[in-house]
Figure 1 (cartoon, helix red, strand yellow):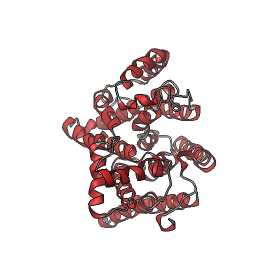
Figure 2 (cartoon, rainbow, N blue to C red; figure 1 turned 180 degrees about the vertical axis):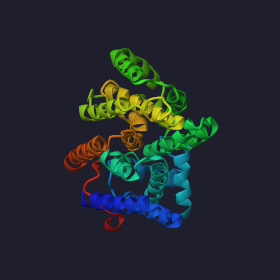
Figure 3 (cartoon, rainbow, N blue to C red; figure 1 turned 45 degrees about the horizontal axis):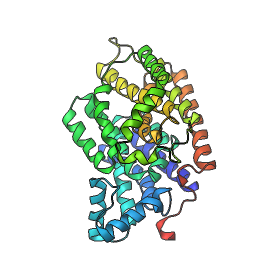
Figure 4 (cartoon, rainbow, N blue to C red; figure 1 turned 30 degrees about the vertical axis):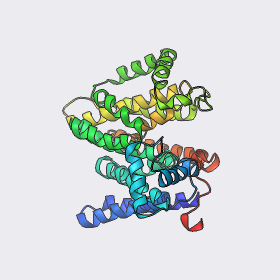
Length: 355
């Protein structure tokens, strides 16, 4: 755990220097780049860290090396493996290049769109999404691309949005979720409407389960129905956290008046709608196998949404109090899930020089 803690502290320290530097643009950009390196190298130079490391990625890499294909991979990730194998037969480079991809889209989003980049980096670690990446590597690359594409929802540039998410789709087919979200994201939902949608969806969750199962049965994910993943586990901790963040966001929802920029309200609405879907999916956990993996697409936006919420709180003491509370509870959460429960099998950390 010490490797992750140290990497996080170094990243946050450099990020703090980058954010506080407002004079020299070149220095600022250099510091932002340097801040991405610790976490990138930790994820890229790992060995056997993450449940899917030897369970999926290494066997698939070797299968592609020997036969030229792997049935469960989308075309983008398949050809990434082939491209790497054109230069080397060492699978280590796959993990290093993927770490660069994930860091690029994640940190680019944080530095360009977060109201508090340092807090966003903290949340990247303590919401557990960094550790989820260490396990579900190719899907989390698609998720990071999806989050970055929010900019094109706000700008209403659907072609760029779809083309960017096509890249994500080429890594993991679940990124198809991006298409309906584009139309849902810009729907103006008041806090009352959001709560009503949440309650109504939970109320018909039984019917919704059967409808979604019928859809899943026609896909390659049908094998998960009635499997060990279809175990009814609810995940109440995650559900509670997601709900609290949504309620916090709805409580401090910006009023549509002259004191607020229309673009700000539009951005807030997009992230609020994403969080609403994240909560709905968290509540459906246990009804459908692997629904958590769909939730990642919308839950990942938490790293931007929480700073956006805090930015809308004008009373300084209240804002700082909530911020301290968020930091404290997320720190406890990551200590429990990763430190004690070893979620995503990321402990102990081993690097490639120890293999």
